Length: 69
Image (tube, rainbow, N blue to C red; front, side):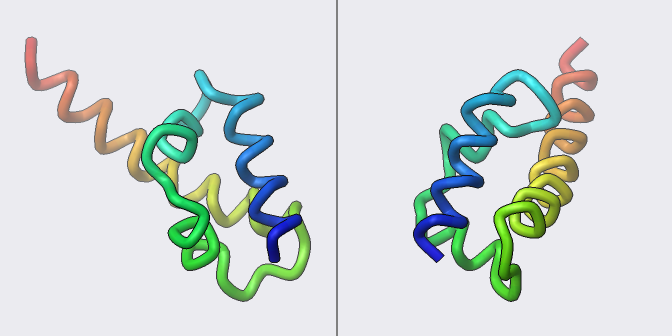
């Protein structure tokens, strides 16, 4: 599991400005990543699953930011 978490974190850093991955870098502890990707057996599965989660959070953030103006 540590290798899969490391892969998710590496992907998040490499894609910091895309699709909400900055949220993982800035706000997720390893234990939270592990909880979010529970059931994944490969890094690819974990990245896809985490991508869906942060994509929703990023969309919510964009909605909030759009209301400021």
